[in-house]
Image (cartoon, rainbow, N blue to C red; front, side, top):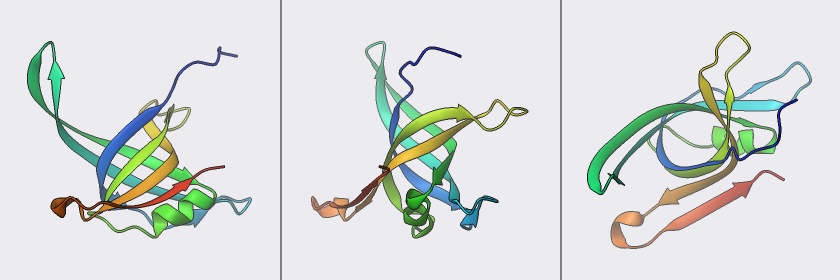
Length: 117
């Protein structure tokens, strides 16, 4: 077994796609989505436009929170990266925290936060 190490990602993103809520054979709720991120970052002292799309999944109570969202909503998320499956090593962000960000255009920010226990 591998050592415990840091595997934590924080990201502001837009929900690009949202799949319907489903359940595992054991009845655990799962919600999956595609996240799109765009920002300006500094790399080697120079500004850079950055964009990335990433698949994400929420399990348990947090799945219901994600399932209540709509495509186009802006969210702030935290979680860890894991391979999609044994056959596909593509990364999937497993969410542990979701904040819905709304109303930022007038300097007002409303956050609805749900953190996995």
